[in-house]
Image (cartoon, rainbow, N blue to C red; front, side, top):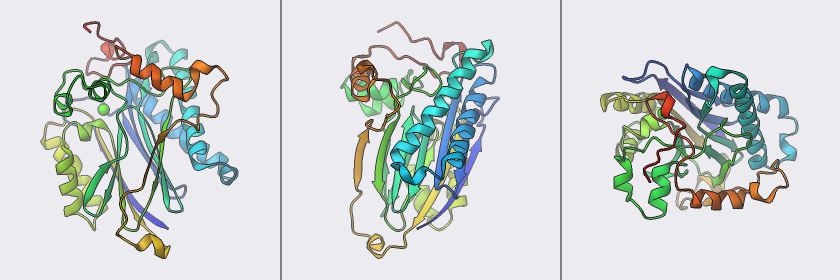
Amino acid sequence: MKIASYGKTDVGKVRELNEDNYLISEEHGLLLVADGMGGHAAGEVASALAVQVISSYLDENSDEQGEKLPQEFMTEAIERANQMIHAEAADTEEKKGMGTTIVAALIQDNHAYVAHVGDSRAYLLRQGQLEGLTSDHSWVNFQVQIGNITEEQAKYHPLKNIITKALGIQDSVDVEMSKIRLLNGDRLLLCSDGLTGMVPDDDILRVLTEHEDDLDKAVQELIELALENGGEDNVTAVLCHYTAEDEEDMEDTQPIQYVPPTNEFDSDKTEDEDDDGDDMEKTDLDMEVPETLRDPVPSDRFNPPNDE
Ligand code: CA
């Protein structure tokens, strides 16, 4: 297999700081976008830490990588990042409450292992169709799932910035992981909500299709479009093109083979039953108010509204 990739980030038109970070490591087959939050530039620290910790985890453990399932390996790297951000936040008053989203894709052989926490997203472009690979850990998405609001209402909801999971907030994190069989010509897009909040999926698809042979142009135009539409947030996009070497992966007739998300690889969790993946899922469904806030006003980010 062969991958080619390109990424870009922009501060946008409203924010003073860019708290997004991204990483492309073709050596490890890793793509990653992190969208930080927290006052006093702490968001920038949190997302940069996530990139650094995950990148060095892959460097340091690449020898043992073959002994582990890729899902397990990725989950461990992200859990490590969570611990480091959480520890750093606890150490410094100005960094208290800092956190970051993460969306990462590890591409190995003919699969992509997609991990996410928060509302940064991964998409798959295959045969002219754009498929979302992640489900936002956000308050509005939760409301959509339980039928309180429609997807259309969620797009313009005043609380659409609230996320319900992030790295660094607690000493453990629930990483959502999925596995996708890749086919020749597939493209993966990872992005922060500064893109998806400004550019509808239809336009993302149009831009990716128009610049099918030019990753750099496609990414640049997506960012340009987010800025034209208001650029209200930092905007980051990472795009990757997968070329198969196996003949069976050259077939272009297969539908998307998507393995639903699972938490079964949270192997480092304690024995405490309340902390295992399944129970965390239930906790999420019972949740009435969000645990974390993402909002232009830093002091409000982690104070859930009480108007439920
Ligand atoms: Ca953002």
